[in-house]
Image (cartoon, rainbow over all chains, first blue to last red; front, side):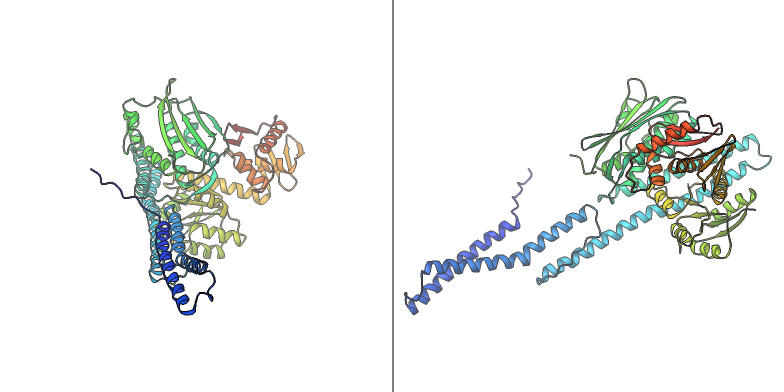
Length: 348
Length: 223
């Protein structure tokens, strides 16, 4: 059986109790001192001894309270505030106050060291992902480039062209895979959220749509886009991956010449994004696993994807305090819904 | 012959791009970082610069910013592995003209280089041609079918901007920011109104068309 948790009392309460006891002692001492003075000097000299004791102990008590607040309580509160900021992802926080208490000075020093370590760790992680990604994509680029040159050479046979197409197709797969794996690995290992930014979410979605223009025009999909102007606070770079992945999938699974609907609406503090395709929809068995890593329900399109895209989407959306879900439409096709809060705070 | 400078620290890629561009009739010089690029550009004039972003010593953005700071207007095509959203904005604001993400489709690279050259030429002459329609920046005039029409400034700039990137979609906000400025009091609806006016004016023009991609933006398409 779990042991009952002892209730935690606030520091202020502890100090108040302590000071109260000290005050009692102070009152005791002052009454004793006053009585002693009276016994030596005589009652007439001392006016209303009770009031004197009262004033004496009040003064003593107040002085003690101010001193302890300045030395202990205020620094604790300040440190608490700063720690809260660090937990939200701000690694520029430092404590600069000077204190006469040795232990508190040490706490400040250690705190500052700790935060700057966290900052450099974060940079290393981000740089790592960016660098490894760069390192991978560079030789892939070379393979792709020379393959294309090969395609353009005189006398290349139909078979040879086909083989080269295969090379190109697989380099693209590899490139997408590397990007997704690295990002997912980084996000998996991170609990502190990256920097937030306030920006126009609808504009970002439009950028994504434009990025995929070639893909949806090739299939002659008729885009039905309805985006309200929405200001959103979240991790801008990561959210871009969300739209790209969802849009990419919707296009991939759409047959030619069908509509593709994308909407973005405000609902109080909530933001709701939907993307509806007219593809085959999602297998009922698969629908609960779609956001799992490496899960690919549709064997027909297996080669084009890595199964990581949607788990990346789920991870990023949850980092931004939202949720993503999918349903099959009665009319056929799937609808993906992303719910976010405008200020990106974690949803209860 | 057009001269192209390639700034790319990876030897394999640099050689690949050089090969491709030489085959397409360009004169090409390759350097391995931003610092060498700036030194080279101090000595010689180039028609297009192709640059990677992540390079040692001086990175792509810094190099371009310095270039623009010196008043060098050579068009820049940035090539990078980063496909982060932020970088696209950073790139365009530091003065790059176009952007490609690795792995690079070399055929696309050639197309973009040519497009940059055409635009640069048109910018130099402050004129633009679509089909048989001519647009003159200095006089805010559009000449087509023998007729010279002078347009109000915003309308002209809107048309000119979109025509210099035929086929590319611009969102209302992008057009708002580019032509009315970031601090403008007007809202995006103004763009709609101006596009409407342009459509009215050039209803009978057979060289180009302004296309709406509902919910996304507008683009100018050659007919």
